[in-house]
Length: 128
Image 1 (cartoon, rainbow, N blue to C red):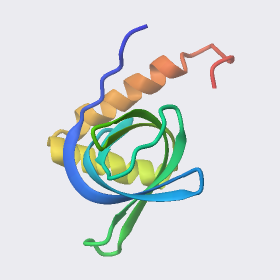
Image 2: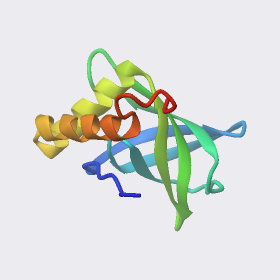
Image 3: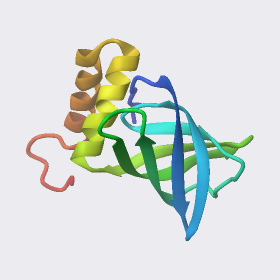
């Protein structure tokens, strides 16, 4: 299976991660439309699902990005997540962050369209 590529950009902001009834404070190191890497003083087991909240309080009105992600990396005080679920408003904010940091909004959106086309090919009702 081919590996899909999403532009990963450095972006430093605070995140709150909730997993198995535990709340973890973390600092985002980088992110993409499909995942992110955070630095935290806590580790989580691989494969666990977590609710992730990123609050951008330095803008008016404040922006809150809510994601659900799977832990795919947990070592050396770093946690890597693949996003499994994201609300439309949160996706639009995330897309804008990646596009601004990358400096190329069109290529960022092309990456997402390519991902959706491969995940849900036309005429294949079995894929959801």
